[in-house]
Length: 151
Image 1 (spheres, rainbow, N blue to C red):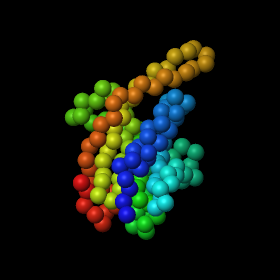
Image 2 (cartoon, one colour):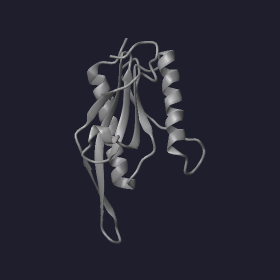
Image 3 (cartoon, rainbow, N blue to C red):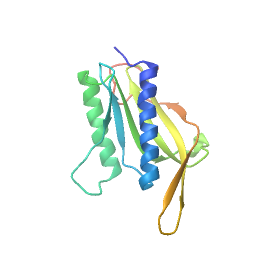
Image 4 (cartoon, rainbow, N blue to C red):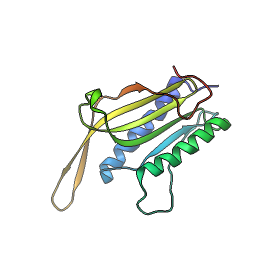
């Protein structure tokens, strides 16, 4: 059994919406994600290593390891792992900063990039406005669902 395009889209939309919320509230975010269970339920995921200010790469690796284990065991039909990245210049992004969502299921593996710009206004009470560009996809080698080849 594999995730449908609609289910993968639901994982992606969750990650884009949550990243926008975090960018508006804090101006940044730690890696986080979403999973799709065999019964079609989307679940939010995060990781904590016990440190107040962990390194984002460590959090990303913790989530990636959990997603790989869940994919192998059949716990997940699909996963989405989001990170705040600098979009590679070769893709000519409208903004250099972006949300990168590694969207993967059996037979499907893509980095979905969403360029963004955060504008801060206000002197005493700061507010943030987030402008997001059009998402675009880049096919990548599977990392979580390794038993199948990607399309």
